[in-house]
Amino acid sequence: MTRSYAARLPGLDTLRAAAIVAVMLYHLKSSLPESMAVVAQFGWMGVDLFFVLSGYLIGTQLLKPYASGDRPSIRSFYRRRAYRILPAYFAVLWIYLVFPAWRESPVLPPLWQFLTFTVNLFFVDFSQHAFSHVWSLCVEEHFYLVLPLLVIWLMRRPSLRKTVFVIGGVILFGTCFRGYKLLPLIAPSGWSGREVPDDFGIFYYRYLYYPTYSRLDGLVVGVTLALVRIFRPEWWSWLARRGHAAMVSGIALTGTVCWMFRDDAMGDATKIAAWGTVIGYPLLAIGLGLLVVSSVSRNGWLSRFSVPGSRLLATLAFSLYLTHKEVANLDRRYLPTLTASPEWKTVVVYAVTCLVAAGVLYGLVERPFMVLRDRFERRATEAVDAEMLREPAL
Image 1 (cartoon, helix red, strand yellow):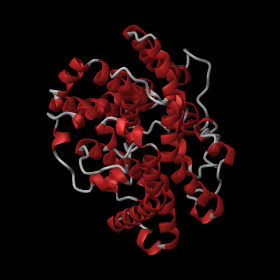
Image 2 (image 1 turned 180 degrees about the horizontal axis):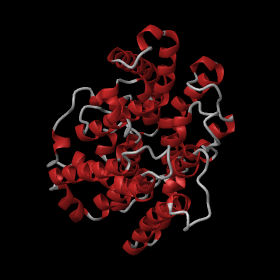
Image 3 (image 1 turned 120 degrees about the horizontal axis):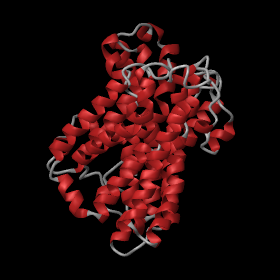
């Protein structure tokens, strides 16, 4: 059975489209008009939105069978994830290896890091920065590997207390870890003998931004939403009836985090963004989680309207994520007259070429393997919640 796209949830399409656009703006901000800089500087938050969406969708897929007294097939789950992620990822990695001109940065990290999805755990400096944006895919792959095992363990003897302890423990660990690494650097000199690194940006990426154990907040919030929806339907119903309030609250909380990160955290250890790093990520995850609630609520604005182009962007999101930096690099190399200055024509060139490249990757690799996956997994596909089948994240 191939997947039907006849009845998709427009709210989740909108969020997924917003996430990939935000990520692209952030990565290409140096080539964009100054008027887009305010939005582009916060584009990194698109990754956190992807994390919340993945946590919610994948968590629902794994937890849904338990609501009917069944168990998910872990083998089937891993197989479906492999069909979904690996073909397109390895296709792009092959291009990186065979065609050096494709690389947005001259030096590629060691191949074994890409094959083991550990690029985010072994960041050295910006000299090996080609295909660096795959760090977030590494975080998700670690999540896909561990979550099913964690679910099996928790569901052997289901307990609200145990579940809350695990969720709170992961969030608390990330917060404490970031505080341990960061606060001694920005505290008054009398508080700590540790000196601020010469290149705080490298320190920030290596220990705070890239590592999986520091960036689990969004995934945990997404899984928490899935838990509430499946095992506490009365709580979920209460949330779903307040879709408008969830959206307003989510925007307000996300805006607060934007204020906390209004300075570039990667550039200076003393700015407020550095302090915001400690508590900003979980607050951002909660704010984005409220937007997800609004997007699937019948009473939410996000769920009522389909933004033009959002379905296309949502469908191509993974292919766009894999290829946009490389395509922009080719644009600058082979279309210099059109991309030499940060003007709107440059934005148009980037948008068109990135969409075309993503469409090719999706049509030739990503989509065929998803169809093949669903053909081999017909029974599992039919058992998955109908909402899950509507979403390109699966």
